[in-house]
Amino acid sequence: QVQLAESGGGSSQSGGSLRLSCAASGYTGDSRCMGWFRQAPGKEREVVATIYNRRHGPTLTTYYGDSVKGRFTIAQDNAGNAVYLQMNNLKPEDTAMYYCVLRGGGCWSGMLPDHFEYKGQGTQVTVSS
Image (tube, rainbow, N blue to C red):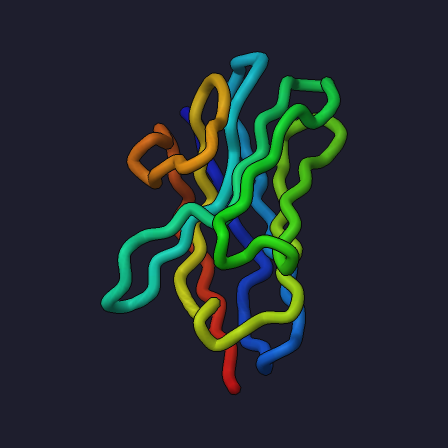
């Protein structure tokens, strides 16, 4: 059973930083696409960042949503079982519930949340102006 456990959400003022973590367990495939999507009240879900990696291998590809490019960075641990989202220069419009997601196989530009097989419980990020 695949489980994704997020942590690191919280509150920040505009211009601040937060770091989200996601620990994955139970996935046995050699390659996977992991990432984060967010959902704010009244807004559509948005995939903000994805990372394609192979277990114990180098990071192959990362993608970012246009709204977070240059501010957010996604990375993985050496074993490929955890991903992190470093969020800098936060803006009030970044306020949302952030979900860690995973699918077997690769990532591609323009992914949608429904492309992922697994999703965590979510962690709230609130940015005040």
